[in-house]
Length: 338
Image (cartoon, rainbow, N blue to C red; front, side, top):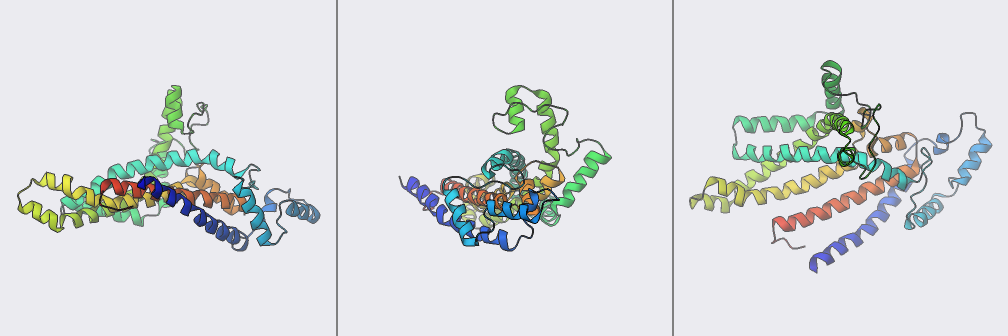
């Protein structure tokens, strides 16, 4: 019962947060972003009178507070408006592009966790050995190397030079037909449909962008796992356990690991939320039809409604991820009160 009340409280707190975010983004899109969204929907030879009529039709000539009031009334009905670029409702665009981003970032996050967390823990256990030096080198390079540069290196070597990877042209080979949509995830849909050609194509195309994202995401996870494990191993209860003669393997995996994972869980939520918010550079370099590319095109085209919908989606994802993080904290350490 207490857990259910906590979840309900956090979800209720989401409402004023989203209200503040919508207000700030609504004002910034009209003050900071240059350009006129009407330019995206009119022909180049359109007259000034035609532009004025369209601006009045979309309510862009109203005072900003009036525009915001109309936007909030529509938002409460689940209407995020219509994108100036696609001509479709923003909610439909988000549903369309979300599966591609979710598939890419989830595989990248899983790879980063499977490599980064054990590497950081092993680095702490084997402190000042070659494993520790290798872990720190990978962590520093992963944080310092720009993701667009690493993506271009992957394309140059694996596609252009060695021809081991397919061309970065989306989610599947253009000459193949995509499987019937069940989940929106091409790899899973191909597997469910038994379309092995599509599965092979979607997996091979996923490899390079997944590596590009995972390398940058792995670095903070490895660093956090290493520092958390070092702090746990130097704590008094671990010193006492070693003095009592407990096996080293039991000390590491039974006593130190749970406490070391607490900060790692928070970092996973932060990194995963960042990736789900749209990996703009990676998606553009690999022509990946996800939310990052959608947001980039919206900003470039001054598409107010698309930008507002994207930021609202990102904020909601962050709140949900941190709520799940608190629940995982409670599982790892029952003494934590929620």
